[in-house]
Image (cartoon, rainbow over all chains, first blue to last red; front, top):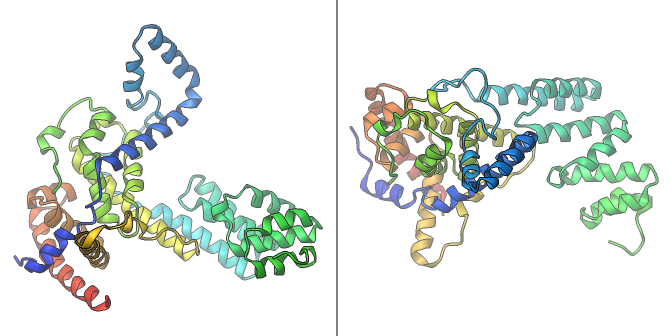
Length: 212
Length: 181
């Protein structure tokens, strides 16, 4: 059996990528999981409220704290088929399928076939309602709607997009649709996040002279 | 070096999520950092792993550590694939930002940071399997038997993989150093 050269071994130890992994990280994850469980638990609000009332009444609030960690109490109920002790199925498969549908939508859009692109996006939404590429799918749908000239639907979806998903190109398109609708005030508002030249180009007749 | 419970301690009945989290969260976070960087944030990976644990029936699990390892590896692979697609769809993420999560202070810290960048870059050049076996043996100090248990393969295969992974890692370090001025 070969050994790592001493200098490489020392480098590996010194540059351990987990060097900064600390109990604080674990505590932060715990808080995130806790928050998520609390949010998921809202739909079971009646059960939660009843448990809280009962535990407070009995002076045993601690039982609630423990209970939140027990799977099945507040967390979603386990699936009917329990996971095997060695889940070895290919985790990439779903993402690959989802990406293929998205890619097909983008390709159809590039070919000038927005209806086909929309059909692919619908197919993706049906197959992967909570897919890993949901953000990309949302943006793609807006681009498809714009390409079809379905401005009302596009505007609705643009307004609902998270800020992080709105690229400069998409924002420019958004501004142009608003300008087309003579909604200059809204257009200027949306264009504020663009740089000066891009904003002026997108705003066209809605640009205010003297303003960047 | 990771402290972890011996396999015997995993063979308990009626595990609760809290028990699993307390015993294994730090180990999972270290796996996430070592297998996921520079692409992924270990905090996000650890979160995803335990989200899956939360949704699972724990009383059926025989070897909790091996089960968690498999989930971690799967989460890392899936998330990496998602990141690749994100980049492909031109949605730049904070790629590799987690490597420089804090500003280094002093010469020693700077050298350590440089070493970390070099190690992460060299590990990134390896295949998933090479990275896994190298991390488990060289960084976590696991025995061949333990690695075989975690990766669910015969131990002789672990030795073959380790032999190749070491050679490839040494070459990857060399290549990374050559590219770095």
